Amino acid sequence: MSQETHAEERELTMSRAMVGAIAHEMREDDEVFVMGEDIADYGGIFDSTEGLLEEFGHDRIMDVPISETSFIGAGVGAAQAGMRPIVELMFADFFGVAMDQIYNNMAKNTYMSGGSVSVPMVLMTAVGGTYNDAAQHSQTLYGTFAHLPGMKVVVPSNAYDAKGLMHNAIRDDDPVVYMFHKRLMGLGWMPAPEGPKTGVPDEPYAIPFGEADVKREGEDATVVTLGLHVHRALEAAEELAAEGIDAEVIDLRTLVPLDTDAVIESVRKTGRLVVVDEDYRSFGVTGEIVARTTEEALGDLHAVRRVAMPDVPIPYARPLENEVNPGVEDVADAVRSVQE
Image (cartoon, rainbow, N blue to C red):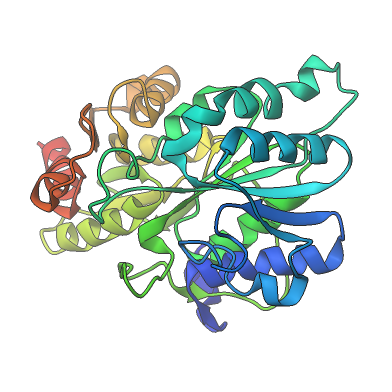
């Protein structure tokens, strides 16, 4: 469902839409609570929980010590005991110190218990660069989480999707990793591109996982992407349209489950595929999308390109970070190249 359908609704930033969904679910279910670093009094360093403390208090909006292993583990235990925790890992880059809790407990405990317990938990985390915070605070790591079975992986690109996907994540009986891009949140100190601020209905609604969204229809090439790069791809598509190249842009919205059918359907129409991702190029999302497409529609695929982060630590210096992070022109050039 495209965001344009809801243009008549009130406009919200992505952070406001996320908070609205969380607040609704907390009002409906006393077992929903939020915990993480700087999420109470501070409201989340990316405004992911701004305003929740005033309504729900410290018993349900809980700041925690700087110990990801302990508080993510506490979230797993609370979920298994029947609660529905939303646990914020401040930066996805920090997953390493808590990977045992994330992958060997949160993701696996339902399987390891033979289905006797469920883990209805949302692990919410910030991803992405473009603001010069260097190699330990600027990664996306979509592919890392999507590679490990047992967790659903959600990546909204705009406010409408952010709210609907958050409602669905909190209600899900399995663990969900909800990855929001810092640049899209609508922060005053980190301006968002055109597009993430959208119309958002007041009432709750859930966007099903595994349903990609065609943001722009086209006939000449399929551009598959997610997160920040949905907006860069749309900008590139407008530039290409002036040259007579009609690009279709698909926002995956979720990686697990992945809407392979939407990609295949588009490629059968256009015959050309460009996959754009802010994660690393090797062993990641771009390769997975290309592989699935070749397995299902090799005869329809005439050309393919990947546009992703090179396999290097993300630089601190602004010119260097801009160089490695795929930009609008990188996307446009890739689409041009598959027309040849």
